[in-house]
Image (tube, rainbow, N blue to C red; front, side):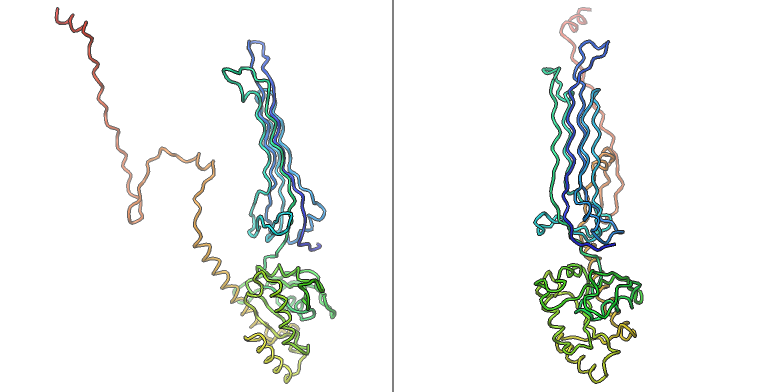
Length: 398
């Protein structure tokens, strides 16, 4: 399956059905009357995030999405059928923008999330809706509301816990194949990886998703090489693993160049926790390895891991460092969800299903509900109607 992370879609919602003009003509109904039903409602355009997709290639071949129109009303006060909604299934992590590509509409970052992009038109009223005492035979009906249409830009940002960045031939694909079951293409020429690759890594009791991004070179933010268009997939990562080719001459210069590209890209990518690893330790003499490690630590300002994607040297320590950052990020997200205000809004069906005549149980200071006491309504004394004067006079005479 070909990888595609940007797509342009033209979407149209359904128009509402027209109202019907009809009259009763039964044999034993003398005056008849209006009998036209309302039109059906048009379908919506809804975006849905699904877990079994990781590319937008479907919208390369289906660039037009259209919902069904509502059916017109019919006689005998029959309402037309509602139009079927159009469901746009997108991968988790898809961002939907306006046609300018900059105004964000919604971020589909949760599996099963749904969002209505376009609303279908309401159906028009039939002539039965307008009958009254002063207008007993209306000969008109309303048309359905028109549909909505808009152009959307879909941008996919893969949901990964950690990202692999570095120059071409830094050993990123080899590292991914070593720590996961992924089998990316591995070759001895630059730009072997042309699209992001995902792999599931397990270390101790932590599982996380690792994304291998295509290599960066100097001037990538200006479009040199493959550019920086794939860096958007690293924006959601909790940490970044920066691999440096240890067989190169100037490792510190390579590190500074990649950091400059991250700063030029922006979007907070240069502020993420970074783990630096000097790769291909099996092909470097020990004397040169120590010098390159010291030079790289001076350039980045923190600890540098020495690893080898071929022999597996130092990989466990790197994975544990990544798992620590990922677990910290997951704890922060869990705390944010716990502190988020709980929405008490209910749907219309839930409100209608509630029994509003039930007695209200007041809450005590301790938080436990108190026993509700239902008071019986007080007896109302019947008012004694005064007798008329004529009756009282008759009684006195007798």
